[in-house]
Length: 278
Image (cartoon, rainbow, N blue to C red; front, side):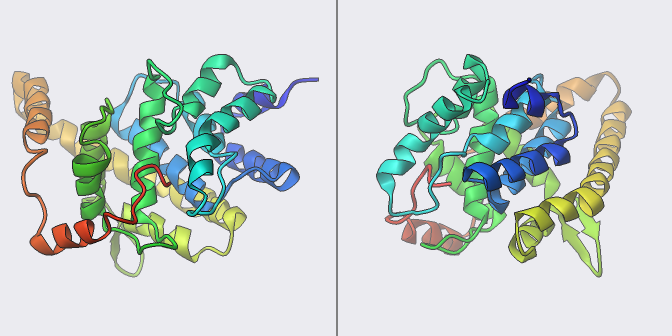
């Protein structure tokens, strides 16, 4: 009989992976909530957008399971520092190999695992960003603009994440893509709304899979197609144009990209915000 690791890794449909994880959580009590679903959707969209050379199946599966031993209690700081390593150890008992468990352990930096896997950096930056844009018991959600500032100026100011600037570029582009409902709504805002308004994890997965996932993919494909056309119009300078844009993002990382009001709000939350809380 195959083990759980083989079973979920062989499932290529990521919505079905979510449902498998949902039923596992019901059976075993592992941590799995709507925020995990949102994180995995953003990770999937990031990989689609940036065409990163990683195994998407591994990333999505690890994203669903890396928080399995998390405790939903901001006061249990000790647990915050150990849940990733404990989760990796638990996943090894389900048949996942050493590298997969290492990727999951590196969702945060508390275990000191080094060198870090590149997949871990993707999961880490998505995890941090998603935690910022959602409401928490100790503070309201930050805006997307505020979250970007916090990623650059606090969470990763002295910590290297190889995908930080690429992810920020992805978020900035995603803010330009709107999904048409009664009004045009930016994709990230729509996903946050679904997270906040759906009654439970199962209904969030269902509406994402049945109504929004394919629609969002088409919108991103259309946007990327237009960007490709623009680069082709620039002829042989197309690749160089992309490199210049990336260089400009890196050079602008320390500029004041936000208002004094936003800066004050971020600073006012400094004493209660936990870098790896989400």
